Length: 253
Image (tube, rainbow, N blue to C red; front, side, top):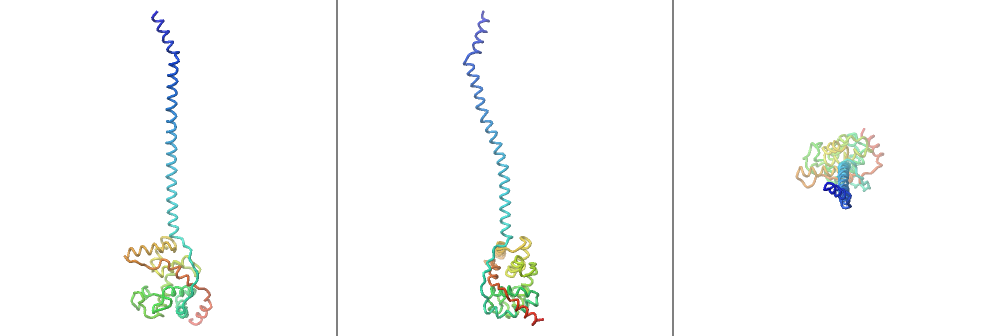
């Protein structure tokens, strides 16, 4: 009898709505817990993907930044070539300039040489090409304005510029990139040409500024050359003296 009653009691408990409710709640709770776990798992997975993507993106940005900086150092900036007149003093030396330009094989660069003289001195003084400090000066002290003979200054300056053209591998007067390199080398010295050519392949305002800053730090001085020398020279660059050159060639053959 007791055994029968115990079985009936167990059967009632099994079919009890309370028991069903408990089972339902347990199932619901497991679903509630499972959803956040799935969400957390997906989130971690997405974060992992995002991190990988982000790392790649950062790498791309760094590369682009490097290319941009390097590009600014190795590409020419726009050069302002608005003309300014040559002084009467410079024009007075045109025949001598042409003579030595022919002698050193750079007669087509006479207009550029005149522009250099204009920038350096305006044609005034005993060292109009400011050539005293270059290695081709063998007569006078290697100090600013050290040359005391204007004609000798012109010869030394032209010889120096011819050497800069050769070092910069200038093909002709229309080879702007290498011509700019040679011009800046006239101001800084030939070492700049090698430095800029080896590192960047050409002149730019940016690398001219970097070179000047490096030299100021190295030599512990406040000024080293003119980082905008190319633009300053080219404002005095005038065309149209081919007839003068042809006449000069006949006179000095």
